[in-house]
Image (tube, rainbow, N blue to C red; front, side, top):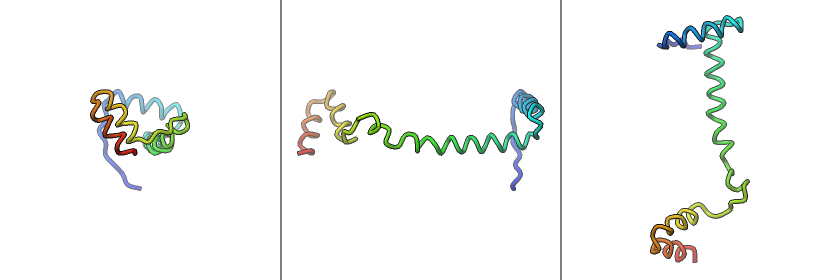
Length: 86
């Protein structure tokens, strides 16, 4: 295991010390758990978002959706999207 040196504000250190004391753990153990939880949460966002639109009944192609929305601003762009889809 590699050791690190990290600068934290005093109020964060005080909070960390209280938490470690309440849980009967060291600062290092609390920080290791926090990093592990952060990594798990950070990785999970992709899993949660994958296929999200399809699960909610949205099946339009992404590029067609973009063209349709942008076509509201520019009628010529909407025509181009329809030509490409044909």
